Amino acid sequence: MRKTKPLYEGKAKILWETDSPGRMVQEFKDDATAFNGVKHEIISGKGVLNNRISSHFFTLLNEAGVTTHFVEKLSDSEMLVDRLEMLPIEVVVRNVAAGSMVKRLGIEAGRRFDPPIVEYYLKDDGLNDPILSEEHVTALGLATHELLAEIRTAAIKVNDILTDFLDERGIRLVDFKLEFGLKDGCLVLGDEISPDTCRFHDKTSDRIMDKDRFRQDLGGFIEAYNEVLDRVSS
Ligand code: UDP
Image (cartoon, rainbow, N blue to C red):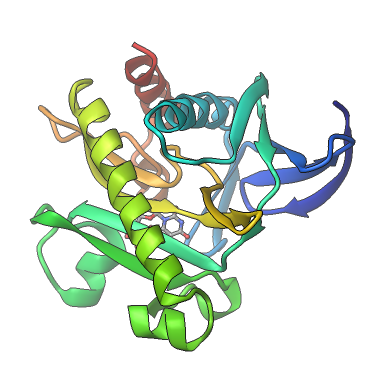
């Protein structure tokens, strides 16, 4: 299997076409961005850490019966994935109030949600990824009722699996973002699952172990990602 040409370059990853039909290489970059690309830095080592952490999570999910695009980790910064037709929706699951939700609704950070809240956002940087109701998703033709129900069920299942797994390793899963696609008409989880796309707090000290360290200029970024990797691989 050989990489042929870059098909899509995003803020943190490059997707490469390969000579293997239906397969792509997902390469993790060292670029860190926040606030829709307004804040941007290169953080050496981030791509390797996110590839390792994401590979662990995808392996865990595949074994638990969630269909993901992950095939195998190829190198330090690359994984082999199935080619998907991506849905232009970001699915966010929230167990604890944080980030944009706290600002939007004026609620206190740290409030727990049981059951968790599932939200949908339109993946459109030009519009700043606006939040969508389920009616928006179906009325705009982004997904049918049936597909949306499947997405919601899958997102909750991912949350259940990751919450338990991380809890055993002393990490509270505050919230996270998923992106799904279709392969031969079937729903498949794509993208990445890493401290760039999740909020992880240490269960005992509440220490932030995710991209909020970059967003909020807290320092200790690579150390936190390294610690997530250590705990996830233990
Ligand atoms: N998230 C993401 N990409 C985005 C927006 C959000 O990975 O474009 C993740 C983010 O890291 C957090 C969760 O989704 O784990 C919820 O993010 P939120 O809506 O609070 O937005 P933020 O505070 O990151 O702007």
